[in-house]
Amino acid sequence: MNKLRVGLLFGGCSGEHEVSINSARAIANALSTNQNTEKYELLPFYIQKDGRWLAGSVPQQILESGTLPVQHSNNLALSEAKPEAMTSGQISCWQSPSQAAEVDVWFPILHGPNGEDGTVQGLLKLMQVPFVGSGVLGSAMGMDKIAMKMAFAQAGLPQVKYVAVNRTQVWSNPCVFPKLCDQIEATLGYPCFVKPANLGSSVGVAKVRSRSELEAALDRAASLDRRLIVEAGVVARELECAVLGNDHPKASVVGEITYQSDFYDYETKYSEGKADLLIPAPVSQVIASVIQEMALQAFAAIDAAGLARVDFFYVEATGSVLINEINTLPGFTATSMYPQLWEAFGITFPELVDQLIQLALERHT
Image (cartoon, rainbow, N blue to C red):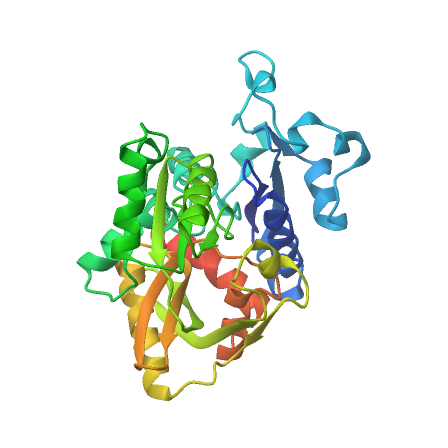
């Protein structure tokens, strides 16, 4: 039997570059298990922070060691990219190596902008080769928190109050910005959360409790994205549910995240021991069923495919469940919430990777 050649695409041009490498290493390991080596051949592709694609020995070394080879460790592309290094003629961004023509199915595990926002998905679509995960529409809506919330509202899903903001409102004349802050205070009150609309992993997110903190957080978020969102704070438990499938998806058991920090920020997410995952979450079957049904509704609302993790707030004081957001390319290490939720459901990590590849093939036909 001929093996399917899986193009594992990782790295990327976002602040979640290192998270992508960790996810890719776990997937590569899953593809090396006995049950998968008979079916698949791994072809790794590493995208540097400047957008250059690498195939062959370099991505393989990164997957094996989790660190960058010495000859690339000081590469400008792997530090903070400077605008002058991005000028035409110096580099050839987003041009895939010749090995890309050998790929039968792509497994993109690029977190954040230029990875899960529909950009890479559009490129893979043009290649006319199957790929794991949502297409252009689902990826773009799943990334942009404002578009996502509009889709949730249209689907009748309950969510926290929010105010959509444009960068021009923040970086405006002295009359407009104070009125914007007045509106946010009147609509949401304090505490509230300021977020860039198109960044993942809580990058640029701030919890604010005063006018001065609000102004600073809006300015900071505006430096990261032209679209911002401000959400009302809520006293609630944070629950998550995984979705797997295409036109007939299924929902996993429900999990819960607990932590001691002020909120679930980047450091808490990716620092060992900062947060605990409770699987299954200690909630009633009624609440779990409500969350599972809402997760499937959210998945359909943005036209997601393959996989997604849907996050919720459970307000115990009122017994209400509010949808927070959907993530169409969640963290994918063996200790990440998404695969652990399916592990509790009875699907092992290697089986999950296999199912996602098969779902990609199914959607392409």
